[in-house]
Length: 147
Image 1 (cartoon, helix red, strand yellow):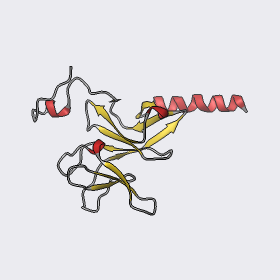
Image 2 (cartoon, helix red, strand yellow):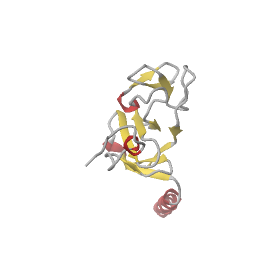
Image 3 (tube, rainbow, N blue to C red):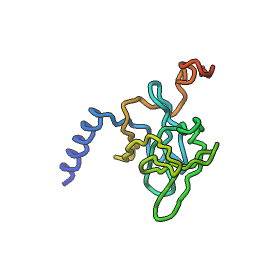
Image 4 (spheres, one colour):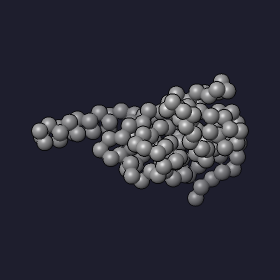
């Protein structure tokens, strides 16, 4: 049986390495709450870890006016419906599908935990630390830059 498990782990590693799944770190390094993940070519992503085992991910900028969702609150609306609330104007986004009662929609990403590591399905390479330049700086809308 141990040989079968090793073969399965090897096969899954090959599938993950040949796909759009990005490893963002060890599961135990993510505390309960929200963690911003930086991208150089698409929207930054917020990894959401409510109490328990499950992880979720969505674009980190609120689609209303760009509020920082990584600073938002995770709320339980009952019946297992979890939302992330924007700190600027209190718009709430479903962790499952990114929908909002306001009609706004946020992009969500599939998240898997495998072999103690957290993976997000996205074509972009993600980093837990800010990249050299942000999309805001590149677009000319601001002058944010990082050393």
